[in-house]
Image 1 (cartoon, rainbow, N blue to C red):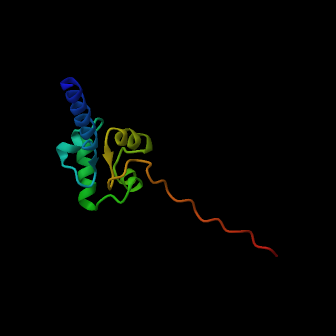
Image 2 (image 1 turned 90 degrees about the vertical axis):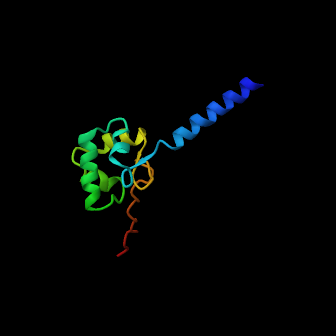
Image 3 (image 1 turned 135 degrees about the vertical axis):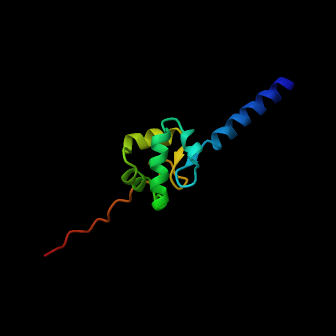
Length: 105
């Protein structure tokens, strides 16, 4: 019984650790950014420099403003826990433009 409780506690703690793993580009410190696998001092410096100009609106804004960032790299960093405004990459794709019905002559 004690072993089952210990295992349950370990699994619960592991799940909580995953929930705390998200690092938001608009709020994270330099050390927190550096803690994301794939972000080193150079990239965290570029992120912080751009963030000082203005907060990132979304992933598209993040990709456009951070030199060396592209969709593939953004997806990898998101998979490692980086978010923008609390959102993982690709969580909210751009809306489709409205369709206009054809005009009849």
